[in-house]
Image 1: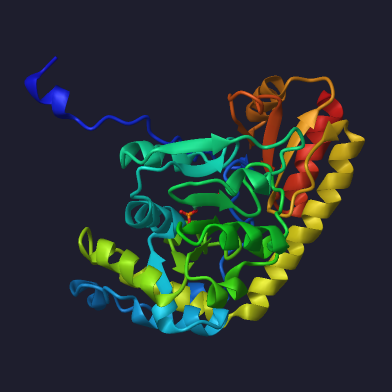
Image 2: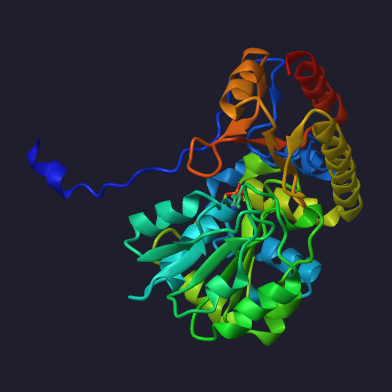
Length: 350
Ligand SMILES: *Cc1c(COP(=O)(O)O)cnc(C)c1O
């Protein structure tokens, strides 16, 4: 071992879904939106003046912050923007999870949470989903150093009713509760309206899934001003210029096209509902997803085998080799054509 190695901060890294460089592949493995970003975004990007890149971007992303405040009915000082919600969540962990008491999150959930906790040396405990993969709200009514969960949960797709989210927030006035709403636009009621009543609630959302802009890296948090101020102080102490100029411009344009946003959401939701019927007919069972993916288990065939067979046909889905969920495949909702190709293969294969 080299001398410096003993001082290296070690962590088991998060493993992102594959981004294979293949043409003609059907990519249903990382919950990207199958539709392009709004034409207004594409137009603004193609008209962007490259000379502007000479200067640093606005460190506060003021225009995007203002547009988000307007869209979500909050004040500008209740908005924090970052480089994807991963950046925003990482900042939130760093800012708010600084207690000796354990941070709580579900055992089956976004697999980045334990990685940030390990990296930042935050004590944590997981709480077991029940046998139907439901988050038990009672598990979060005990003493803790903070709480985080996705709603809808990933990779299950199950939505917690807003009344239960509120119970958890209300029962923990001394801890920050982070609700990770990466998939909320696909059919859930957001906790944003609760912000006015609770100073310990932070709602995190992203442009990566519902707004078709995973490549732009835009995420944001909404919460009362003191929470946002605390996060900004950490951000400016680490990297002030997080969001690049094209992302700031594209984000504003995406928010200006509510009609396009709603129309693509509608298509994804319709395709998801049709996919549920088809998957049931093929012998799959799954929690009733409110996200843009379905977490499905076949009655006979092991998930690993289906996963490999699909991959050979260049259809990529996600399989997590983890306790409790290794029998499941997480299938992102693609276009109707992509889903048809998936079902055609499965009908022949199963
Ligand atoms: C995709 C995802 C994120 C992160 O998305 P970004 O692309 O970083 O905005 C955060 N939380 C959950 C639960 C996700 O599925």
